[in-house]
Length: 208
Image 1 (cartoon, helix red, strand yellow):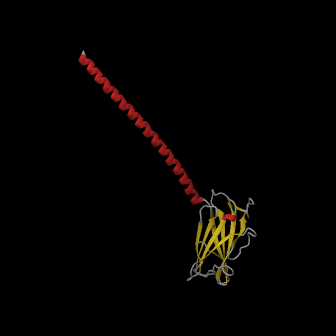
Image 2: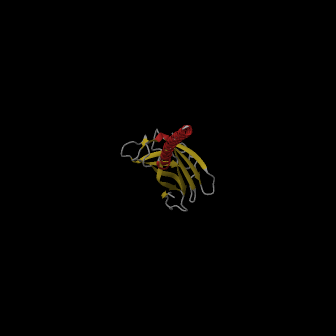
Image 3: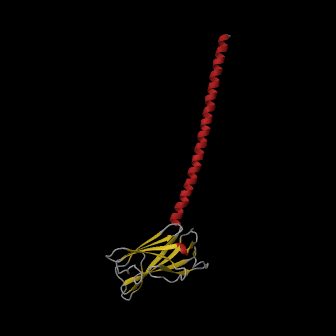
């Protein structure tokens, strides 16, 4: 009888211990599950933010649809960029667009200038100071203040004369960075002029 009581008491102690271990394992599993779920949610949110930023960098901002040059006396002395917005981009205030230009005639060194929007006379380029901007398509009437999704704007850059940017004979290099002063992606256009120009001058395509 006594042995049975001792055996039962021992079994009860073992059972309680087993129950405690089981409860502890359940609690650990619950905590681990909560941590995993929390971590997964945070990773998902981080991935969404990163993806949104990547999409904005890739598809956002201003880009050049085509680039042309005006040839005068055997050299390009005007560069025209036809700019628009990537799909999904927000409207851009033209006053926020800064054009950083680098000009390198064949065999010479790079020369750089920063050009701003000419708010007083948008269509007029001022050598060494500002670019000219003319609406080619402006169905919503947002230009001259704003570049919107349906607008195409021609930017004019003056080379030579009062500008420190030299004109470009054949086989020269030219680079334009279209930047937004309040942030957003920068568009870089790297251009090499043709190996020869029409004898009468005129417009040449500078798309590479």
